[in-house]
Amino acid sequence: MQRVLVTGAGGQLGRSVLSLADKYAALSIHGSGREELPLDQPENMEAFLFKFKPDVIINCAAYTAVDKAEEPAEKKKLYRVNAEAVKELAIYSRKAGCKLLHISTDYVFDGNGTRPYREDDRTDPVNEYGASKLKGEEYLLQENSDSIIIRTSWVYAREGHNFLNTMLRLMKEREEISVVDDQRGTPTSAMDLAQVILDLLAAGEWHPGIYHYSNAGETTWFGFAREILRLSGLDCHIAPITTQQFPTPAKRPAYSVLDKTKISRVFGLVIPDWKESLERVLVNKSIGQ
Image 1 (cartoon, rainbow, N blue to C red):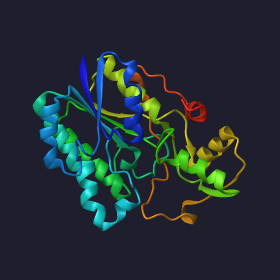
Image 2: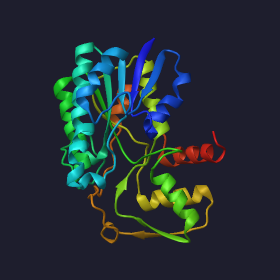
Image 3: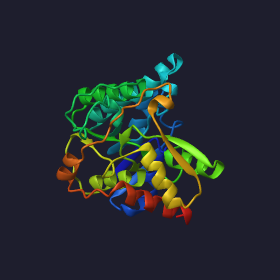
């Protein structure tokens, strides 16, 4: 039985992985939070890892406050969690002969593309969060090239702080909301991504490298919100606006759709459309499953 350690167990992807643990008899899955594995203190990580002795690490942990990350006072913590901690995990996994699967982001790209981004496309982040995640990727590949990196986008889950739950709350509180309609990407169900990761491990399929995974299709934040409204049956008017009309401290890529051809081919995946997955999440949310 493979001993699997999930970092960032309190986050939406980490919780999704742990919620599926009972379905994978060949995997002994354990979650770690900030208390056991303080990623903002990389120098204190190795002792816990050597004590736990995982066969596989799924690194779901990250500093994800994209706008806050632009504050100079946050830079040290941002890079400690998203870059230096990843380096420590890579060094440990190489020393211990442990597999490492790391989650990265579409924000490593500049958003000037006009077709879905492939794994070998040029990276050029437009904000500090994206830059810190790219540095984490670089450290990982330098220290342990036998690792897997999965870049994903617009992740949401039934619980937690994410676009889905923010929209549901605002739609209940207000008669009208405005949502950006000139940033294109693909919403990704955390549960779908968690299942892909665990299927990969359970099948013993380990092909190192960088992969892209999101749900299929593409939309804008406005399109995402409109589908949430339709499926939830709430009564609220949604107005499309431009990025310029909704300024934020961190710049966002205008286009960050990911090409999933490689991960589909290598691991034999059939990737569900983002609308199907959203409906499944909302149905389960409404019945409390």
